[in-house]
Length: 316
Image (tube, rainbow, N blue to C red):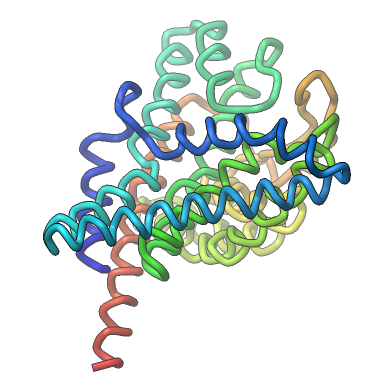
């Protein structure tokens, strides 16, 4: 699996996620949308309905990935190998995350706060129309940090652990969380199962990120001691059981205070502050966080390749 991880990583760095290309996450999104209404009609209890949707999507994603690899392998072993690489490549998101962040940074650098807010609105759930420049920078940095776990460390972890079927079970949980895992409105009970499963699957990778961020901070000349210290001090302060760890790590590395109250879907959500807030955010902090993203992605790939090789050697 080590070679597959490396090739998938290189594919993502090269291609990213071209918007007009087919992608299993979009297929999962359509599946969730099409199944929601009939499942809600069949199961009166919203939590039971959400559990049924979650189980169905996980089976479809993992089973589809396994069946695709198996069919390709029967046609030719090399084809099976290539399909595995592509399925893992589809599960990670490095180049696209960096591109979305740069789309916010460029108008900020040009002094166009309105355009920066519009670019940010495409990648965050909070209201962006009234954010100050500092608020836009904080939101962008937080999004890169959180998605370094969701879009890089976790997928590579599950790909190394169980190949395409397991990584696509994880992606199904992640997609469910983003589509129905809200804590308010009609999805409060219905989306509970998908949201809790996503929390569970990201639990270990989020904590592993403390080490990756600390090493990356050291390699990039940032404050690695503060990265480790703030991560373990403030990582548990976030409302999410996992998002606080990468955000606290970046807060320590850059010397920024992150988090705080924000408006989501028209409602003010009180979130604790993370970090010590030594200085005001600058547009360059977005580029520094992107740099951390690339270094961490390389470290993660190398780490899991080493682990897979180690396991293979011990088993032989």
